[in-house]
Length: 305
Image (cartoon, rainbow, N blue to C red; front, side):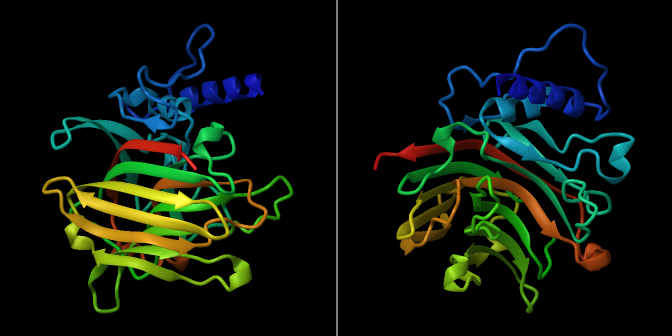
């Protein structure tokens, strides 16, 4: 297992580094596996300003990523879709998530032609402290900035999800996310940020809207998120989204009893980024544009029972 992790970390360095978005030549000599930043607790991920090693940092802190770095035209000239920059508002480095409407896809899968994805997540390879098990309570904190003028459609544009991890047999009830934040255009043309809950399949599934807010309140603003879940069939969910500029709470979900565990799951985990539909055969592409979303200061941890 250690050799496998080491080999993967080397692959990430070779495949994804380079400020000019070109494939870097293979370096001489052995490479060390990525290490988390000094001073960080397990489950914390903070930008350090080293764009070239962004993917190393992500993996070294126990997270993983799914990016379209080599999709379409990027096959010839790979583009690093998660980079870093300095935020004057936060006075620290942050993560920049890029998506390109005319090129990017969903993990290069040829059978998925109506959507695109650029995300980070925890998963089955993350430390145990970063994956929720049945009966455990989890805390997720992060900051995000949706771009000014962000374009949306009546289809999905997810920026955060909580999902179950499938079991080895592939039989868990994890095809649908449990919690989703999506940015969407309504039939009247207004834009919303929606927090959606999906019950277990045995209970009929379907979307249940826990909270909705005017998307305009979020655009161009850094927002701090704090989310708590109890991973249980009779679990709970709580959320607060607070704008940093003025401390205003833009959206919240009070402590709410919900089924926050899925039958057969190997654990519950979060993901962040942009995962959006551009319609069958690209029908919605004229309504969308390239976007750049900001994220910062991720924290995933278990809380005392």
